[in-house]
Length: 66
Image 1 (cartoon, rainbow, N blue to C red):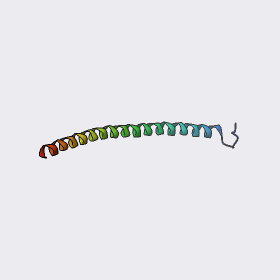
Image 2 (cartoon, rainbow, N blue to C red):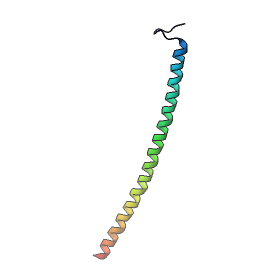
Image 3 (cartoon, one colour):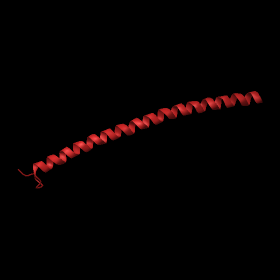
Image 4 (cartoon, rainbow, N blue to C red):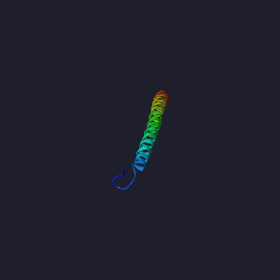
């Protein structure tokens, strides 16, 4: 049995299997990218919080000095 483009069904099945494998790998890669992005932004929030505390302490020191 031949497909419309002249490829055999086994070739089409192989491409379909390859597409499913590539899609599965792409989903895993996207999960890793999203996870790394979330972790980086969470650590960034902690850094901004610490920076805010530093600025607050600096403001207190300036007001005590003046």
